[in-house]
Length: 507
Image (cartoon, rainbow, N blue to C red; front, side, top):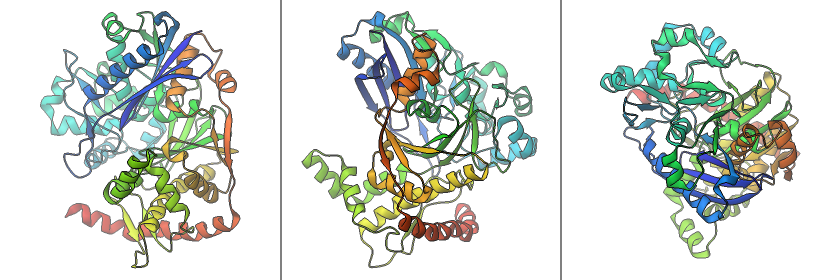
């Protein structure tokens, strides 16, 4: 039997999973690490934490599985997108990584727009300049920490720093590179025009591969530390959402998924380059060679629920520990007792600013309609509904662009919630399905590794053979009508508060 490893370098933890060639989980392991917020709106992590978590979890799964190292043919890498990792001439990390949800780069986005028109940015990179993306972060360091920028010899994304640790190679692949705002997305290569305009040396960037291409093999010292073979291949892999698409079988036209992790995403596959001229959703290369995807992003999806749980649900946490159950099972049970609409209570999930559809780093979270009649359960349901309205905004834009989605898959931590899936089905007015396989990004990049190692003919063929549907949630027509009314008010609230957000940011 041949085996494959999928590694997902997430925001809260790294998860490493060993699969057999039939896509079945053999062993998995995860390690958590902190997120640092030195100032309001900033978000950083230490790449060394990711490195340590990856090496520990690889060692654990190899040891526990008792699989022969020669039978582990390939490794696929997935990870949080957009993070800036800078290495010096000794390959040491220069500063903590500024990660995807950091919103400090508003001035740099304005600089980018003064350097080149918004329309040209969209033509080349398929997206307007964005605060969360890597290019603006590079400019921020260049402007605010010139001594660090002068030391920089290599710029990598989070998962690609792990690739360097494992293989010694500086490389990336098209799906993750699409989120740097430096890639010619239609052409699937670095944009000479963008790099020249931003005065970024191309030598700082790694070679760009397709997601299922082999990018190197495991270094001898890493093989010694982890129990892997030096012959084990490491393929391009994918950004977290492109990896989740493969892991849920969203690899052909007409398929899409919604994921609710720390952030939330509505993601549709497209065999053609489809770009929103307004820049509200993101077009990127996907992990299937020669194809693309369009996605809308909610910055504070699962983050909103986790924040509320951490701040106001300490008794639920203690109860879950006592009963040895998941605290979110208790939350779902409470929320299910509250009717749709949360008793005329609305939540805007803008804890970290927002991407789709507002592209506004200054907006912040709001409870609207709060009264003495409301309970904690009302507020919890309002949080879940607010995230769902935001995801529905994303889905509406895909429809407007003519992307016809025949089925919507649900994944991520929030996708496991029957209550949340019902909200999505009611708002999307279509079936929301899950797959039997639950490893999402880790499975997706393991499949890419299998393609790169020759175990599968293609990404599409592998998904057809390995992934099967599980549950299906159907929309409730009465609730759908109710949510349409609330959604209109939800959208109006942002417009009403837009100016006030700017005032708040300036105080």
